[in-house]
Length: 124
Image 1: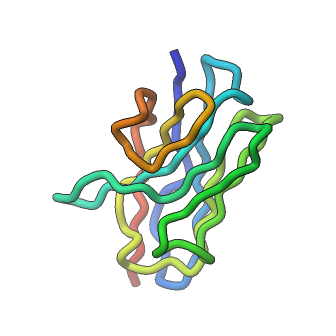
Image 2: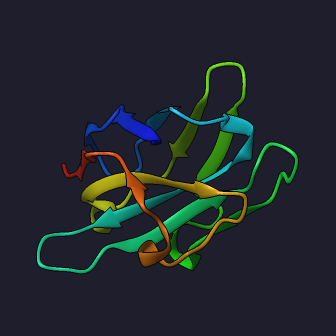
Image 3: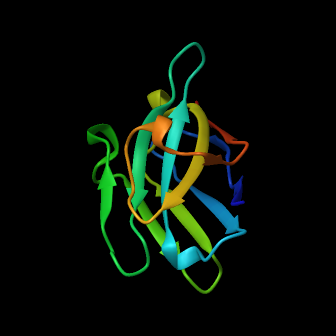
């Protein structure tokens, strides 16, 4: 059973930065691919970014965050971070991390393990 917990959400001004962290436990971290999703009010959960297993090094991003967000894994701490720069009001949502064995996906239905989410609000 994989457990995930997100931290680091909050309020930021447009153009500002936030760093989210996802702490992962319950399974060999190196074998897990981890993704971040967002869910805005009244909308479906959407893919944000993903990182492959420790041996993969692969990353992927949705178009609207490419060049602004960076996903990275810290294998010493069993965490996956999402550095969010140049934030925009449309980035406002609850952000969730999710994990699955070996191969990452951009489809939330492919993930069985989820954190509870952390609120990100971008507003002046």
